[in-house]
Image (cartoon, rainbow, N blue to C red; front, side, top):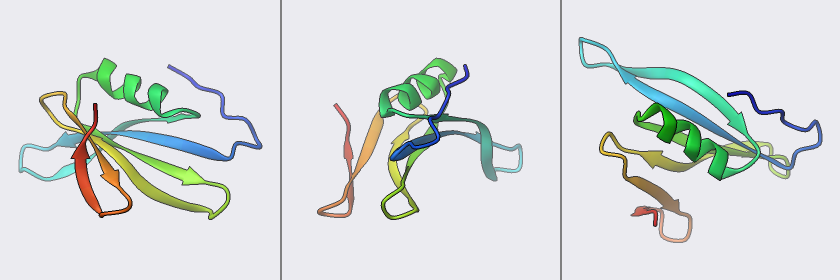
Length: 89
């Protein structure tokens, strides 16, 4: 699945699959850049894999955590006001 990111994009979502090695250490697997969170979420859902989504914003030039997908398929998102992870509906 390839997504074309416009050169002047204001924000980009990075979906990264999390893999666990036999020794128990975690590392990143497949990745995809998207212009919407829905595309990033669909990417991880299609892999049926745990992982995370981070967002890069042009205004700050920073990348921040956005959401995570657990092994059971549930999603949680970071509430920026409280700093806690909450279930995503």
